[in-house]
Length: 173
Image 1 (cartoon, rainbow, N blue to C red):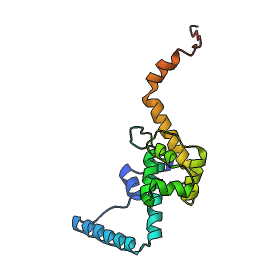
Image 2: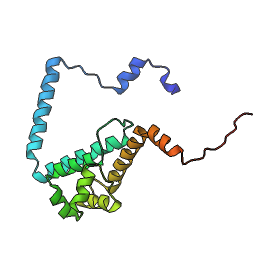
Image 3: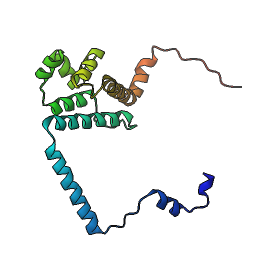
Image 4: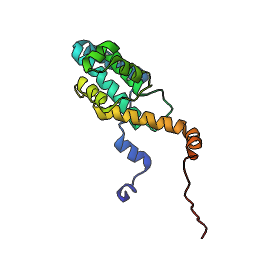
């Protein structure tokens, strides 16, 4: 960092950030051109490419949730399973048939009443052609469990403390 001491903060920023010398009208024109190009690109996509795009978008939302420190979201395994089924336009019965999991198990997972086992997660991985790997589904479950523990920590501590003998730590020296 010593080599940067000879420069002001403004000079350093100019060296690393491209200046925007566009007027408001030019910015609007550039935005419109970009929107037009994006719309044309979306129209050229075939249904398989469009589906791939939507699945990848779901995967990125899942990864953002996993990596987020925020536990105050409505996301859960059931939420993402529902989003996956909506993306594919699949009903519970159809998904049940395609991954050979009972509809009642899928329904209980959709409602976050039950935690799926590893086989369920692996079958979702295979079903998505590994676009959403089993470990991402697993990490969503871990994040959900973390949220449950943090939200219920005081109640859990109180109910479980009667079963535990605390360590006697005499820290007086």
